[in-house]
Amino acid sequence: MSRFAARRLAAGIFLLFVVSFVSFVLLSIPTLDVARQLLGQSASQEAVDAKNAELGLDQPVLARYARWLGDALTGDLGTSWFTSEDVLTAIGHRLPVTLSLMLGVTLVTALLALLLGVWAGVRRGAVDRLVQVLGVVGYALPGFLVTLVIVLVFAVQLRWFPAIGYIPLTTSVPGWLSTVTLPILSLSVAAVAGVSQQVRGSVIDVLRQDYVRTLRARGLPPRRVLFRHVLRNASAPALTVLGMQFVGLLGGAVLVEQIFGLPGIGSMTVTYTTRGDTPIIMGLVMTTVVCVVVINLVVDLLVGWLNPKARAA
Image (cartoon, rainbow, N blue to C red; front, side, top):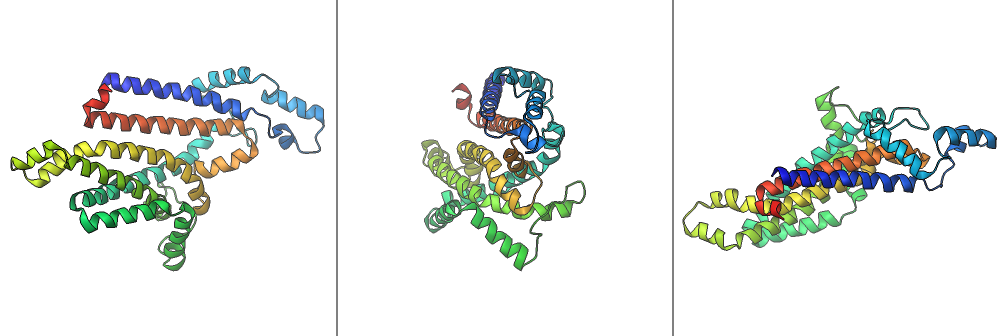
């Protein structure tokens, strides 16, 4: 198991270096005159050139990346070109908001998808068809439409939750729950639809295996067969899909945070990307990649624990 984890960790670290290099090169393509934006349109060309030299934009891309990488390895991601705020500090203030959404959606998705998938896979018949229809509809509905309906129903008409705003967990637990419930609900619809179909298919495939028939023929209770044998073997593919859903939710958070006025890294990405603030953007990219690597590592370890054959592969 330790060698399996070491291989996955090494692959994740390699991915970090590759993504950082590609992202830095792409951001170095001249599309916005950052120095002109900082100094104003009336600034002289000499002042603009001096500002570019101060920011290091007059140096070759590889030299700038080497300097950025050296600082990043020591934990220094630089400062914002526009606000002079430390990148790690700026991201650290907003990351808990997005992570709370992602963890909430993952928990809701895992619970509901497991219940619906097992229910459909075991009962079959009308229940199975109902779950399949709900899954297709939930996955096909546009995310912005689902969010709009949720806001109109629960925030505008029923007034159960606030439509916009965010209350930190450290300030008030009930207030925090009231501000993240609707965003989590809007992001969970498509996630539950996708994962529940995977759970359903995996449960059906495992139930058809010969060893399950043998266990039943030996007189083992159906609940024991389901929870100790079927779910253990059927959960590995579902965990993989759940991990992919978590990664995809990082992109969906941009829309949700904008709609609900949440100060997370999704809305932060939109703001600083339009400015061309490379230090902040690189910090956001690396934060996202680290989240992806950690989630994939956790999923791979869980899958390897559930299915020893995956470790050997």
